[in-house]
Length: 203
Image (cartoon, rainbow, N blue to C red; front, side, top):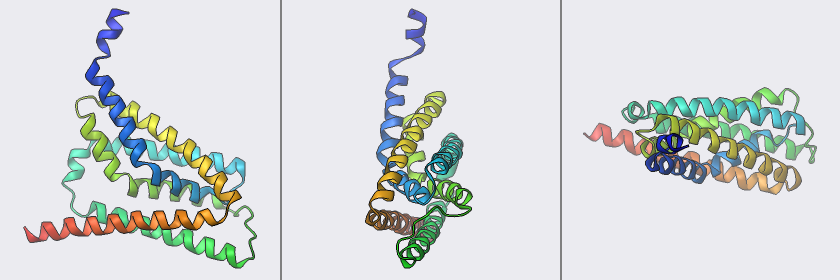
């Protein structure tokens, strides 16, 4: 027992809590995007899409976090993420507009499972750069803690996304609010990424 307590040091526990808190705090927008991506699926397909999409996203986040220092050196990565998210936003808008034009027939989308998983992975990847760099800084000396913290926070994000998807199914107007949130994040990433490139060119 004493050996176990010694192996779990206070700095490691603090690092774990920091990783979870930072990622959960910054992942609210991600949960909205995931909920938006799966809102038109059947309940069974919705759970499957969230499970597979969030699983892929978790693996990608962990890999990115482990090479976060190198990511910092890549100029234009934030801008690319913003443009990717803007594309996801546009696809969601087209889908919502088409559904609205069909007089509210929001039935399950044929072949929508693959599309939803793709959107989850692309959106989470583009929105997670800040999260990944923040948690990597918090757990710099504890790679094991980093992996566990990210896995737990991504699981919590999946649960939040499932709840959001149910709300979107019941209250259609929330989807438009969600779309504005996603658009805002995309524009923020584009402005920030453009500023980084401009600053690099200036030097």
